Amino acid sequence: MATFSDQQLVAAAIAASQHAYIPYSRYAVGAALLASDGTLYTGCNVESASFSPTICAERTALVKAVSEGQREFTAVAVATRDAGSPCGVCRQLLYEFSPSLTVILTDLDGNIHLTTMLDELLPHGFGPVNMKE
Ligand code: THU
Image (cartoon, rainbow, N blue to C red):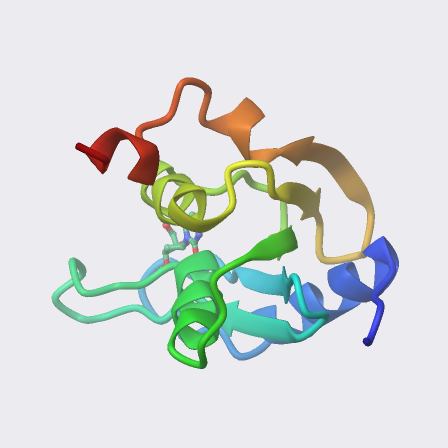
């Protein structure tokens, strides 16, 4: 199984941010999401002229992974110019699969500003367990 260091995840997230399609915000985001089997998925934000179809980098990576059969993740690195934190929608969709995911927030120079867990970013989250009868 491939293993990735935090710095390798950070490098992959920064590389992904270079593909961001951001004509409106100019705010590039890259994400590198590590599945439990060691496969790495990357994503960037993709914006739309009508704004609401815009998808964040984290969800791009997650949807790529889930659509290839992945269901469990161990870590995600997110790269932005200011080491910004995942939005609420991304937190919620990541929580669906891996509430205790490690979240690494980095700037585009590779400086890690915060390493935390998804359930710290989304405490008392609503998830699949709530949907069990
Ligand atoms: N964005 C992300 O890609 N991830 C987040 O978690 C926060 C926001 C994107 C969406 C939009 O393209 C740009 O950043 C500005 O909001």
